[in-house]
Image 1 (cartoon, rainbow, N blue to C red):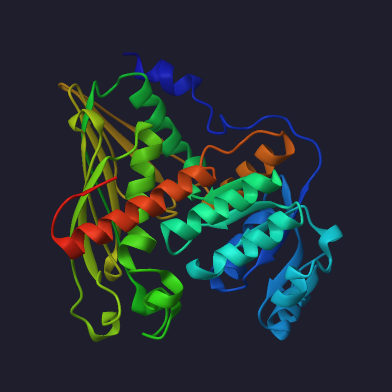
Image 2 (cartoon, rainbow, N blue to C red; image 1 turned 180 degrees about the vertical axis):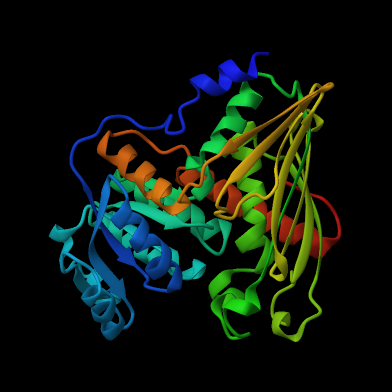
Length: 357
């Protein structure tokens, strides 16, 4: 296989199609992620603009709006659900706690607005499915906000697997960890099951190796097993301060994943096949430069990818897809399948036995 030829023909924006116009976006939920990452990403991007800010606190929305050009309109949640200022935006970005996604997405869908919803789509598989159904019934685009589906290194890895570089994939290993208490105290929503869902590490971090494996391999798991523990007092209400889980795919492919909200920030991802392997290390985080390491028999190679603003790429991808009338690859069904898998992981841990998907 001529890797250089494959790399040379690879377009880092292989998803991009010429598009006209701009997608006007309402930011729903003005936490730190939206303010520090999403809004700047839209401002730097090519296809979206922020025109409306929605928050549970009117003063917060007004404060954020005052720092932005273009004087975006501000709404509280009640006004947003009532359809106020609906003529000022075409799509919404929902970045509230997991268990609050459904009502905001339903409100947007009822207004005929397209949706980019943060992962996981919801706190349970049932609510995730209801969220997807609401968008399907309204005929609006729903994309799950996976930054890595537009990351060029991940997309190149998917092309390598598709081209047979690793032969038949047999083993995936991935992990993602961070010290979440460095970003807030024990009262933060990610440690509250009423807002986050059944856990924290698998739901918030384990979803990255899970979704990346499904995306790169174009396959879905059929069985899950897991082990979890929580020792730190801040994690008393969730079962997975640390977690490991195994996913079984058709054909005997195994994916071993791990996640923790109370370890050093770290991430890795590796696919091993019958003829070669692909690995990212570091992975998942928006690192300044990403290296894709390849090995096939006695031949090895590394491909360096320049720094990519993953959030800018995500919004550009979403905007480009909506403006050109194409469905996103990480659509609502893709996101809902991840929530169902995560639910099976928690079930498997509780039962101490594999769970069929």
